[in-house]
Amino acid sequence: MVRYILFVVMIVIGAFFGIFYAREINPVEVVDAPPSSLREDYKADYVLMVAEVYAQEKDPSLAARQLALLGSDAPVEIINRALVTALDLQYTPNDLIVMRDLAEAMKTWNPDLEGGN
Image (cartoon, rainbow, N blue to C red):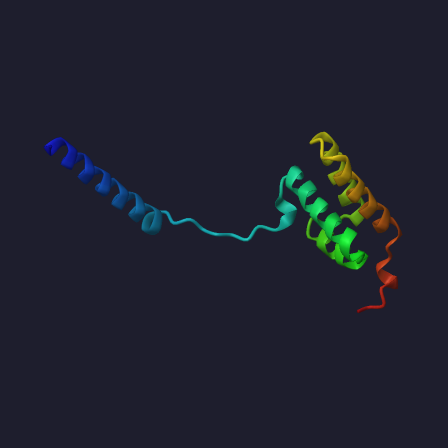
């Protein structure tokens, strides 16, 4: 019986010191990382999400602003890199079509013609 009580006491002591260490000695720092720091597969997922929103909204300036979070390259270049990754990761044909449609829209999109709104 003493063995079980000692076991529970050691678990409680270990949990206490673990929480103390995590909160006081070495706390976790939460940092907002920009989307441009994502791995390529996550960038492809992000581009797919932007493409799905574009398919519903048909707003190329919104899509361009969202894609700009992935870097300073032209939106078409960002989408093309994502398409290569999507092909490597075997995205579904429907996903590839949605991404391709966004790339086509970004080829003809001109921010100068948006009217500054």
